[in-house]
Image (cartoon, rainbow over all chains, first blue to last red; front, side, top):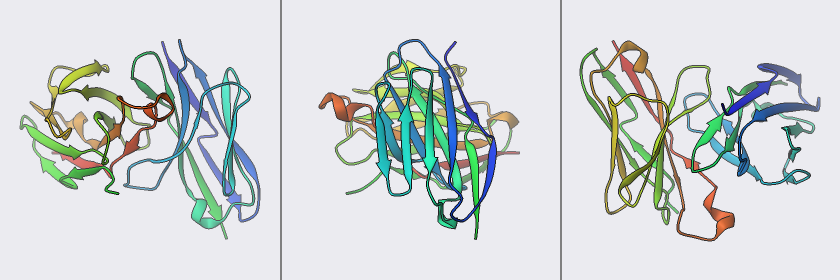
Length: 109
Length: 117
């Protein structure tokens, strides 16, 4: 069964304190790994797509990396506005997307 | 560039009733997927529509049905509502008929918050 897990479940950082979020997956036929940001009561906002092990993508203070079994979302010098739930999803064979439960990030000023 | 839109924003129903949710995809997209997101959890895939047909379905009962119209917009219908159907329903659009590098990107709407009493 295709499965995606994320850790930690919740993370509190001080402004400027860099850290990483983990997404581990067990799927048959990975077609892509996606990171989304979701603010409370809103739809997920697309951040990155990664397709192959070793690939990296960057956007402002965020950097996503991919290995054969997991992906990391690195947050460098976070700001309070980076507070959100970060969702990881994998696209498996066909068109199905399987989401992880998310990591709730709080950045304190 | 219009993004994904959904209506209504919020909806309150009672058990046993039926509900219809609507979605308009991002301009230029031809594929619509529906997700159910319970509080504190990640979105769960319900089904996907392309060329007015259900292309793939997740592990949801037949009470959940959908439709896609010629203009690519879509509806999600849920019959015989249960308390457990209370959730945020998300619509995501993507492009199937395009360059491969673009096909996998899904863009989400703001969601419809359904409360079943």
